[in-house]
Image 1: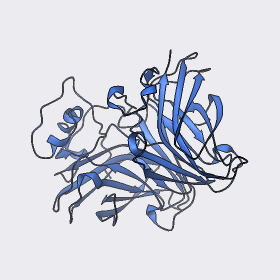
Image 2 (image 1 turned 90 degrees about the vertical axis):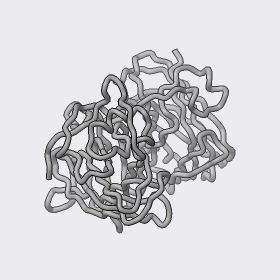
Image 3 (image 1 turned 60 degrees about the vertical axis):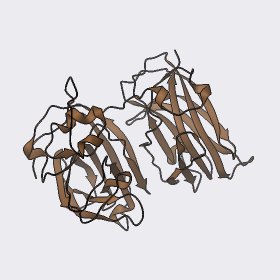
Image 4 (image 1 turned 30 degrees about the vertical axis):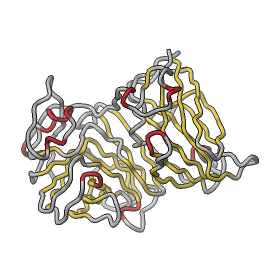
Length: 375
């Protein structure tokens, strides 16, 4: 296994790009593309990937010793699945895959704990379409050691996968384990990534978009400074008290929602939960407002309304935070505005809005979440 260290950094000015693949990349990735072999076909600055399955938790972690930019996604798989893909995360691609294309994915990873006797974690890697019948190629199992290392898989496509459906699936249910995955790079046209380039590091940090480009209720336009990206739904779902499912909901803002089904009342209200990251630092005394769009499908409560708990807390254990609140939602889509005053500080990218669903046996759907700093 190659151990060369690689990470991407943007230059002071973006480079002009030509060619059928790179022309489709966002302009801000132009300098990144210039530093890798072949053609860059994902966004290596993001790790807020869509994850799914049961009996797992995921969260973000930042530390200076994480190679490739200082950030990683933590996956805790609580039981080995019947299939490796029973817990997985999807790295989206930015271009279509053509039949015959040579595609390579590389990523940093390490195993924190595992039930395997060899002490190694296991990740299944597959290039595939994120739509039925989920066709793909390049199926490979990688054994992940306890120290940070760089792992690669390369394969030649035997089918076409359209841009809207193209992903790299990282399958995690091959063992009861906790694995961290860091910066991930996908290229076309090269059989390797790390052996041909070494470039400077850039931390994959949460980013902010121009609020004018984001769909939201008109009443929020003057709420304050938007400090999260509501279009990104790589939230940290987890817990043993139920399940979650990603949905397309065309009648609400941004057309996406997640259904949280609490199959039992948890010992703790966070036994079914999610965490929504935001990008800025928090200072003690900061005033914030969180707007949650949600509805109840069913709830075993006295009034039939779903009950959601909310707080702002750290991204990492012991999840210290502030502003614990509870609110109810009816069976129609509604927006609930929650004010918060920071009683402690967090560094840039270290805080999330946590939503807890295990206070009742219920089925609720959460659409976009908007986080504003109001002072």
